[in-house]
Amino acid sequence: MKPIDLRSDTVTQPGAAMRAAMAAAAVGDDVFGDDPTVNRLQEVTAERLGMEAGLFFPSGTQSNCAALMAHCQRGEEVIVGQEAHTYRYEAGGMAVLGSIQPQPLQNLPDGSLDLAMVEGAIKPDDSHFAITRLIALENTIGGRVLSRAYMADAIALARRRKLSIHLDGARIFNAAVKLGMPVKDLCAGFDSVSVCLSKGLGTPAGTVLVGHRDVIDRARRIRKMLGGTMRQVGVLAAAGLYALEHNVDRLAQDHAHAQMLADGLARAGLKVDPVQTNMVFAAIPADSVAPLARHLEANGIKALVSPRLRLVTHLDLDRAQVERAVGAFDAFFKLRTATAAD
Ligand SMILES: Cc1ncc(COP(=O)(O)O)c(C=O)c1O
Image 1 (cartoon, rainbow, N blue to C red):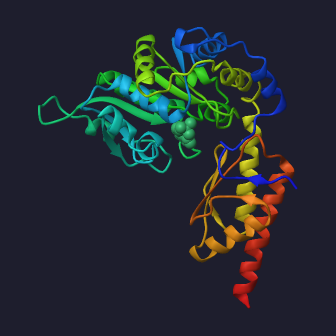
Image 2: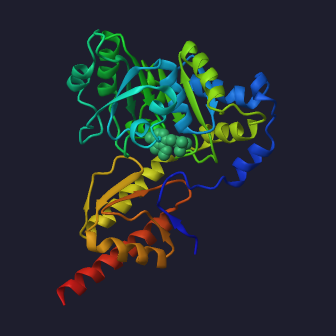
Image 3: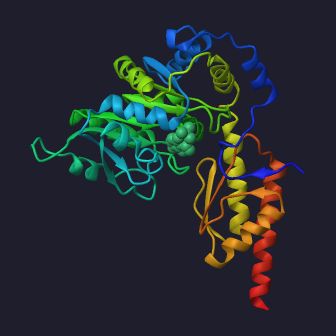
């Protein structure tokens, strides 16, 4: 039986066609700008997201960090969500490496930031304060989609207060597919957007930062400083080009699979958050966490089980596997309920 891995959409294996594209890639030394496949990926991604220029990074973490550092000087500030990857899950890189002060705000239940609170957090021009320079949003955030109308309001606020605005769009294609709108329309107005190729799009590695040419030029120097400049990396860029061509529209399948999982968990009696894209969140009773983890493992299912269970769908999961996972959860919770009733 094929294993079922619900830990993240980063666990996918490159398939035969992607590997063939990688093997056939023309390459060169990207430090000299000589890698035609990297150059093409940067151009294609920038074009697709409606931006002037693009820059290939090994990871989303480094791309975000370079973007924040390109916008903010030492001692300047970014307004960001408590739940944002840039703030919470990037080892404090913006502060450690960029000397950037984060001003975190609690995310609202839909993942957005209250724009009145954002405006209230902008520091006055006074020598006591750090200089607020940037707003950073994330879409999707915890699987939730920020609407275009909300992002347009955030962009308008940034413009009015003369701030820059960055989007961690690690899963922006999931948002675009969910909203049924061109990704370009979703990104319009941001100064920079970081888009991961190694999540729902299924490449082994790689993120492209796109944005205004001057931001990308600054980010190129910072990438060098961070040690992220690579050489014949067209082999990875080829995977990215393949993914942009073949793996975007199919994200709708991942979203449908996530909905199937959510429906199954709800039928098993769990409280499940509404599903928007490829992530399912459900509350697991504390005394079920360890036994559920053992049960899933015994059934060949990998999942990060905690009181707030997160399951993620991706291109290495087919419908039959999703049904099998639903069956495994169902069997576990039916047995628990029956045992509790005894
Ligand atoms: C929203 C978001 N941004 C950025 C990243 C960082 O990407 P990477 O793992 O490539 O560093 C992740 C990774 O999971 C993410 O979920």
